[in-house]
Length: 324
Image 1 (spheres, rainbow, N blue to C red):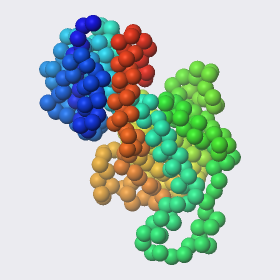
Image 2: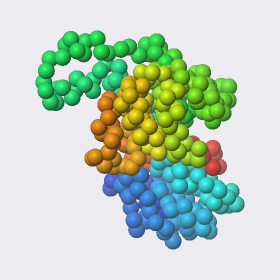
Image 3: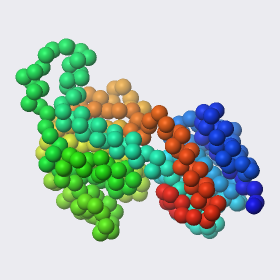
Image 4: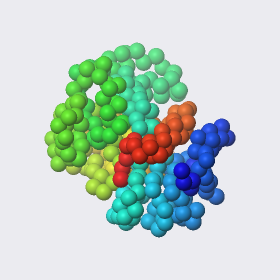
């Protein structure tokens, strides 16, 4: 067996670092001189990455383009916007190299986060929690009739990847009317499915509009003033995709007018969101700081998926979450 060079720029705990090193032996694990604890951080070019057979982490796109021996890249994120261009794709194709991401790692936490958002809004928890933290009034009359049941309501999931599939499973007991929007309809989807060209039709009937779209060509500000206007009056909007898929001023306008009844956001643009940003001030907008994909064992699960793919790679098997 030839010894492979595996480059990594993700910063793990000592225990995970040791586990990864042992699992990859006798292959050579090369650590970047710039390690990042956050998988959202990016690195500059690294000569060592260009001579690696396998890359794990968040490499610079130029290292993929100018690599001399690259066979496979595994990203620690679900998003792959920086690599979704012709230059990278053509370079990988010329070498027969593969690119996989970690979308399966984030399916459970992101789906649970969305469900938590939905239940939080349905049970009128935000105003109750704000009151609990500030005024301490007993808002029985005001809040007793504010909650609503999810059962029988409609939701449209814009994006149909691992997160959406897991969310469908989690929502099933609530007996909601579900639909999804994806680039093209395959016919084997478990719920009613609209093609991307039919997004306006899908939005018009939904009580809950759940945006799980990545930052990619064609998704920038896809939720604009016209799209918010087409939504059902009183709908709730959720964003756990990427901030730049939303025209945030248009969202604020819709919230202020009352057309959209509420918004739950885990992603914004920019991040961090400045303290004086309009989103903090508009009514019925609730924000979490890009934590939907996180949990205590996030990095362990990430390493486990990489190692599972590594075993498949060594056997010539099908890699999970393959993008290219």
